[in-house]
Length: 97
Image (tube, helix red, strand yellow):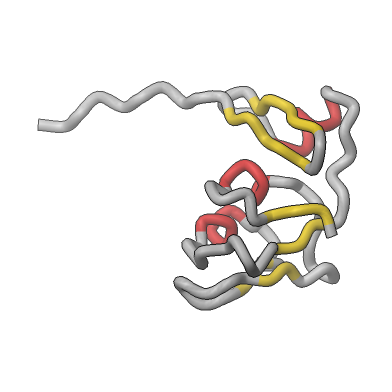
């Protein structure tokens, strides 16, 4: 027997001192723009990154790399500042560069 799927939830994204809400199904960059926020260049804080690879899975350009259970890194030449990694990171390790 399959369990019923939970409806998608909105995600609150924190970016430095500001935060904004990403509605279910919306793209982070669009939600940020609607809130008057421009996604800056981002980096991974190695002190808090647990290497879960959730950010790697959502990065559409392959800009984020790293071994499982080790801090990751963002290649600025590949990053398009879409912010999807911000919404996926559970430890708040994606921060402005």
